[in-house]
Image (cartoon, rainbow, N blue to C red):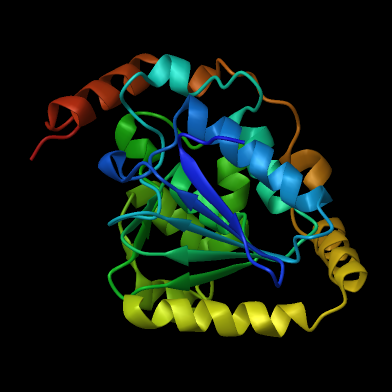
Length: 255
């Protein structure tokens, strides 16, 4: 299969590496990226040859969130919604490791949060900037953020849109390790090796239990969402996106 928004490799040991491959756009999520991520994670979940999945981004950033260029079409994928793609990542029957450098912002932060383990470079940062764009995060993204950072931290960083540095993310507990980018490859390899020692069916059963006892329940987390979500069509959202594109402050902020 040919991919345009990502690359896919499978090692002889069963480690699948999915690399977001739009570095010129900060690996932002567009129509194609959402579809291809969803398809690959469904494939990885079903393929016996896949034992562990590593998700990463090419270039400077992991994922800069939604692609603000061509917003309307990019956030309404033909095969996967943003929510169903996140569900495919989150419920994949194989362990999933995110290797994060640079930005993991908005949908990119949610994408990392849907993975089982996050390894980060020191220069990595995370943020939930939706309110600065005139909208609240969607229910699915909100739930993923809440699960990742916890109730109190989510209220602070969701309300403020502040960046969370990698060291702070480690202190908060949602990043497992912080290491120089040159060392992350070895760290990821060592973690893959440790996970490969686990029996495949036992790992799949454990992931199911994590989903079953997680908060909120997966049945509520991935309830169907309208592609034309109301929170993305408000006057504030239009102004927030316009301000972002024009590199100016939105009208509600007075310096």
